[in-house]
Length: 577
Image (cartoon, rainbow, N blue to C red):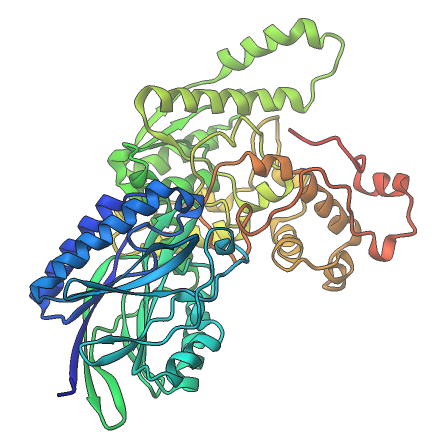
């Protein structure tokens, strides 16, 4: 007799890459919870047993064997008559390695392979996996389940094949990382496949941070008429039951939770919190330490750290020198007090002056310049790393995307550290998210309510305070101008002429382009950080360090000497360290 009712437990969880034993244990515990909930089957995300993305780790035969042994143990346990399991893992078949999704039921294993392997942006699956053949559905207790894996629904071929071969519903496991606007993009793709196939669709996404990537969860179910039947929360683990009934029109989800998910700036902020939290937790650091300068970048990083870990695990250090203003000292102390963190002040004059004394014979007869400024930053970086070494806390770096784009950072100085939660946020976005945090914080945040980034920090002009009266915009365009130019160059790959046509000064655009290219060597040595834009530095944007290309475009007739005069610096070399 055909089954007309089905309960699917949706396991939106946070697996750890490489922790096969821990992921297996979590799957076993979740199956037991699903049994208590009355589920017929529990669904896990893409490559759950391995953790996603496993990158080249998945090529190790020992790792493949561990995943295979884990799924075989779990499969044997389903012989008890309890809930079946749908779970992802790498699967070797002969010489080929596949991104596989397995149905475990009654002690047996049925496997389907991912067909469309993404190989763009942050994805590199063709490097490690073979594409599977177009699949048919699997039979689960008389119900024909279509199991397209993640990218398999971004084009129509796999779903079309499943529909034509008798699938009754689509259960899609995902490892879909967050970037701004991703929620709407997923809904549009899922709705297109539902419309084409006439089948309901479960979109189950993992949650958690993995290096630069943040997986936001936000799983959902669409019925065959594209109505939203289920919406799980973003940025948190959950095991949710979805109840299904079959009528003459087919299967429909008639009962499941629906919540509101964060969007826009709230989503960006929550992603930064989760990315930092999981990087610290999964690497087993006891806490973090960062330099608190009295400026907005370090203030928002401190707030993110407290929201991620709690104030007791965050140590802020003010490292003043002769150019540090009284205003900065007051603002840093007030910010630390508002966040409730440990705060220490360590003047860096002995270190800086010791370096200058040591180098004086070698530098004799040469004027002071950026070299001496960078000694300050490098002294601070060394001190923070020493604190990290002594107490085990990870150093959080605080450079925003605007600074990292144009090299406005000191390598082996303020770039020292383990992780950067604002690496993919432009300066204008840092301001916007700081205002947001003062009136809101994400669910589960461990920091205090209310204003934590003080009005004076938000109001004052940005400065590195490496010389008397220094302001960022002595050497950079205003940040609203700079950020718009950078979005054109980085996110959109626009020609210089196209950016100029938007109303920007040509020489300014050319200067920014040049700085962007020259800073590539710094970015290669920068710590990882949360991805929130469509195109971050690192996984998404891979540029050569040695690179003489410049977009001459409408100014191709100009000589090198004219361009040098226009930008104020030589075309090749002269990089600000």
